[in-house]
Structure formats: structure tokens, C-alpha cells
Length: 205
Image 1 (cartoon, rainbow, N blue to C red):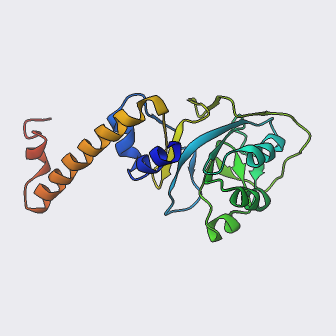
Image 2 (image 1 turned 90 degrees about the horizontal axis):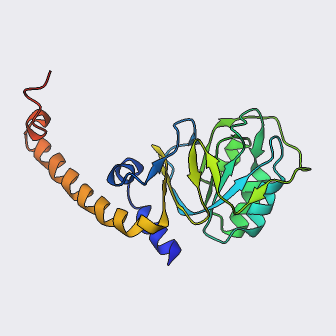
Image 3 (image 1 turned 180 degrees about the vertical axis):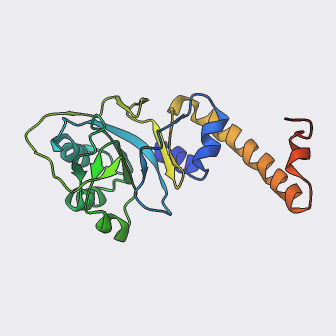
């Protein structure tokens, strides 16, 4: 059921999802797609990594349910590559759908070639240690947005949004209404109408 809801949310563009409910959060543009075109959806499995160490990320990949999206808060450390080809292969073997992280990644060609969806704060060659602790499967703050276990993650070429599961049904209803409305507007523009008339902007400054 959880993955079914996530898949339904994933059918819609992130800007549209963001605009239909104030409870939907958009992550900062600093967390960008590693490549385009890109598409990611699934329930969040959050990780708080110790700065400079990716031990907790390895544990998360090992323990997260299949279909999860690993969401990692590093304290916005973009000087190190917390995620690389080895972790990607481990994630694919476990059925992990993708990665969202405020820190750096490396081995990016391997991720594009597979392809494995990644949204990150930077590309960084320097590696990490594996001696820290960190926290897995607990709420984290990433780019000033709280992400809880089971929150729905949707990512595409425009970025990433977080949808709380308790409002998912409401969001799905509202987003379909909005999509249909925008489709009608686009059709009218293609038929020759002007956007200033459709949005009643002729008397604007």
C-alpha cells in the first residue's frame, strides 16, 4: 500500500505537487539532480551521517526496506563523497530506489550508466571514514526540511519534494484537479488565447 501511494505521487511533477498543499515541502535547489532526465519516488529512509563518515549510510542500505529512498543529512558537507559506486551497487542489490543527500557523491559516471537516481549537494572526489556512528531510520533535517521515516519522496528534473503520508490522499485529489485545470489552460493557449486574458492580467503594472 505504501509503495502504491508513492508510485501514484510519482506520476506528477514536483512543482505541481508542491503547489497543491502547504504541507508539501520542496528541498533547496542546492540539492540537485545528478543527471537529467531523472525520476525518483518512494518512502524515505532517513540517515543522519557523522560528518566525514559514511558508516551509517552503509547500515541504512543494508537495513532499509526494498523500495525505499535513502535520505541522508551530512550537515551539508560537500567536501567529501559520501556515496559512490560500491554503495550504489549495494543499494541496487537491496531494491533501494534512489538517494537524496545534502552532501557530496562521487563515481558519478557509474550512477548515470546504471542509471541510479541521485539528488545531491555536490560532486566531490575526497572519500570518507568508516569509524563513526550516525543515526538511521529517524527524523532528520535536510536543507531545512524535516524528513521522517515513511514520508513520501518525489524527485524529478526540477528537484525534490517531501509529502507527509497523512495528507497523501488529499494531495492526490488536489493534484489531479490542478493537472486537469492546467491542461485546459494549455489547450486554450494553443488555440490562440493569451495568458494575460486567461489570468486577467491586462490591467496589471
